[in-house]
Length: 247
Image 1 (cartoon, helix red, strand yellow):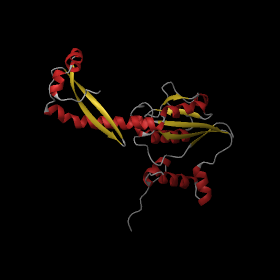
Image 2 (cartoon, helix red, strand yellow; image 1 turned 135 degrees about the vertical axis):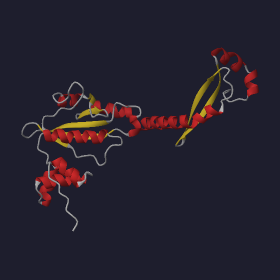
Image 3 (cartoon, rainbow, N blue to C red; image 1 turned 90 degrees about the horizontal axis):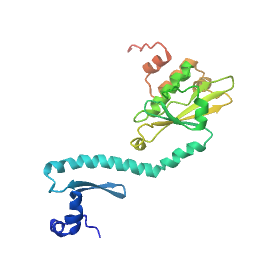
Image 4 (cartoon, rainbow, N blue to C red; image 1 turned 30 degrees about the vertical axis):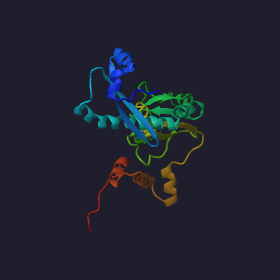
C-alpha cells in the first residue's frame, strides 16, 4: 500500500510518518506531475520535519522548476529512444574513422581507424591541424557548422584533403541531436573520416564543367547555395565585390 498521499489526520496517527520518517527528519513532499507524450513522469521535493504546508512563495517557484525538469525528462526520453549507447558502440565496429567533436570542434575521442588516419593532424588539445590552407578552411567551416547550436542547415559539403597523388582523406560531419547534447555536453558532432584511393571530383569542379563556369564562379555559386550572401561569398573567395548602382 502507498501511504505517500494522505491527509493530515492520517499523518498524525500513522507510525510510518510519526516514527520512521520522523526519525529521518523528513515529513511532507511536493509532488510535480510532468507529462511527456504518452508517459507520465513525477518528481518529489522532500520537505524537512516541521516545515509545514508550503507557503505561497515556495509554490510560485514550482512552475519554473517544472519547466526545467520537463526539459530534462524529454532529453532522457530521447536518449532512451535513440539507443545512444548502441549508437556509440557501433563506432567501434566500423572500418571508417569516427571522431567525436565537442562544441569547439575539437576531437574528444576517436575509434581506432580515426586514430590511425588522424594521428598526424590532431594536436594535444584535440585541435585538427591541416597544412593545406584550402582544406583547413573548409574543414573549419564544416566542423563549426555541425557543432553550432542549432547546427547550420544545410551543412557544407564533405571536405577532401589531398595526401599523395591518387589518395585523399574525406571528412563528413553529423551533428549530435540537440536533445542528447543536454547529457553529453562535451560532445556536439561526429566527424567521419575515410581514405579515398581515387580522386573524388570536388563539387565546384563538377559544377564548373556542367555549366561552363570558371572555378571562381563555381565556388561563388556553392557559397551562395549554402546560404551566404554574394558579398560574404566574394569575401571568402577573395573576389572584389562592387554592388551595381540602381539604374
